[in-house]
Length: 336
Image (cartoon, rainbow, N blue to C red; front, side):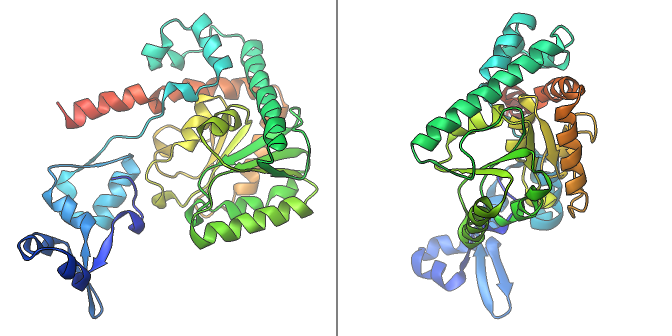
């Protein structure tokens, strides 16, 4: 099960199903019947839950929401394996450092828990190189007219805030956008495909802000895996503020911490399983009442002598979010 949101649990009018499905199969659909007023629907998510041996969610919070809100009648079947990401989301410059100082890390993510062997200067240098690469790629994207921005070149001495994800309502990026002018010395890079009407409206608002703001803001078009890797690796601060119970797991925040960036996030999806406020990330209240405060904290850490420690703490906690752990959990929980 990949989402707690209703769009991921398809419902169709019963009369439509009766027109399209053979009579002998209709009997099996009765377990999915739901009534809303005078209308009857078939919930195909409930049908799949009924006929499945196990239901696997993608974070502990997703499991709890599914048991309590979506399918409480099937809670004995419901478990979870938290999502993970592939190793190639880690910047090449950090990978080179790990190869030099932490032999075997790619086969044993637990080795990343201790980065004491790597000097602060090396961590900062690797991060600087990633920011430089992002700046160079940004110029290439500008040449190909794949960027809308109010500046020509990324100043890598600025704090770089990034938000590369689907532009959809529950991600609440409009709240983030409203605070941008409080950070005139920072650079903000957005990317992601607009989803439905809300996404289109947000994108228009973002473009208007780019045109009228004195803060450096960019929106990268044609967002894909290659662009995302440069954006994530070259970021200082990754912003992730969805409604907590609307996020199944989230992986953009995982890409933030494996690159040693500062994560500013609500306790959404799988975030609470890894992030401790003030240690390896900054937790925003779900009502976003302290969002500006946490963004200011993050910006200050990038400008003082604590940044290397943030890089170290973020990476040290990243072993849990890597795919090898996820595969091990699938085997032990579902296939053993």
